[in-house]
Length: 338
Image (cartoon, rainbow, N blue to C red; front, side, top):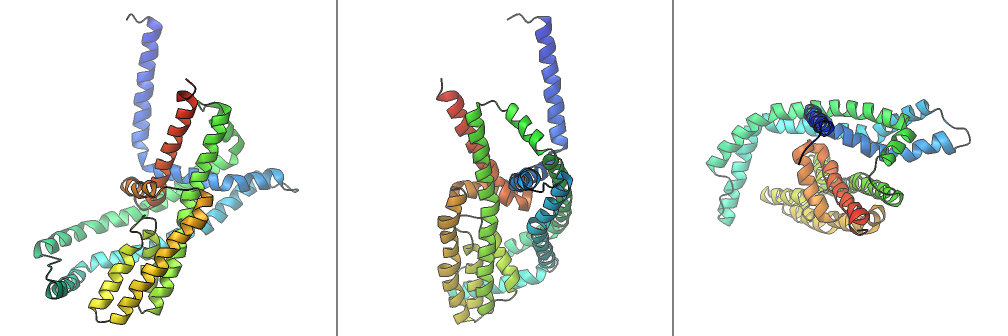
């Protein structure tokens, strides 16, 4: 096939464009989580922004509205996460710093297990590997904590410009969508529904299960009940196993330590109360927000943790949900109409 001069110039231009775009993406890939966070916050804040700047009797100045919404979102959504992160950072740093003492305790547990069950849980080789791993984790963990602060700053920097020019931003997105108006509206509605379901739904579920777990852990004498309640809430985002990862080992530890009735109580409380909080919430509340399939959440959490770290608990399921939505819209737009 013969290419004329204009086609060659166009091909060269596209090659340079894609090469430059790839280079820029590679250099800025560390800010992907901040951009996704800004997108999630925008979806949650756009309606209140439009309400106070366009619908109330005394319309707010848009700069005041944006400043108020950014401050409110920080206090309600970001500050609690930062406090939890600080608490977990202190605990994890302590655990890593005193990993040798912890491994000695683990070896004692292994001895009990081998004595009563005939199972050697932790071998000397495993202890050696864990020792090496623990020595390597702390610097990376501290770096990750510092990166969270940078991501929050960039997130709000992007969010500010998205909100302050919200109408122009949305009009530009709509104009450049490769779908008809009906599918454009459907896409935006689905994106909003999935964003609210994954961000608000998962966070509310985590808070409910953390609070429920805190009550049980405190009543039954679990050491550091607040810490383990927070861990329980975080684990609630993982489908099927979820909070069992936390309360079951706690019950086993209590039993091995000689606190038999407390162990049985934690086991029953976890199986009957904490687990059913998850079931009731998903059935009653999350169905109304948006029915997210457990497989999407499960693989989304794995994907998100690998790419984004801790915040991937929310962003991972969102990415998979967005991908599935785009497939549905594409089929409706181009496949069924052919």
